[in-house]
Length: 67
Image (cartoon, rainbow, N blue to C red; front, side, top):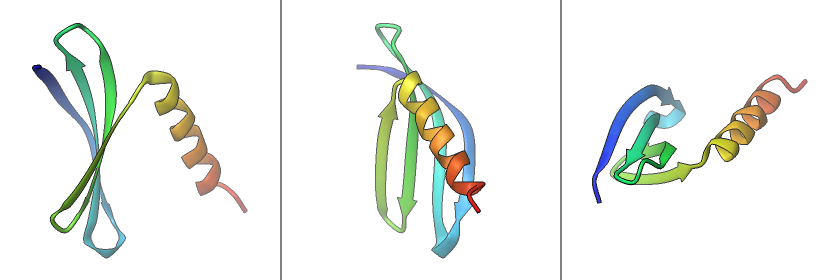
């Protein structure tokens, strides 16, 4: 299976961690948003459909703006 990957954003997080957002398009035309979390040598990668990516983004905004 072949993927076309486009980097969207990269964030430096506390404790020398990194988060990356990528757009991934698969051979069959399906597109996903990939969240990659790096912690030292450990990498966690999650592919999100558009609806889930929107819900996650809204939840992050809500958490960040909470008083």
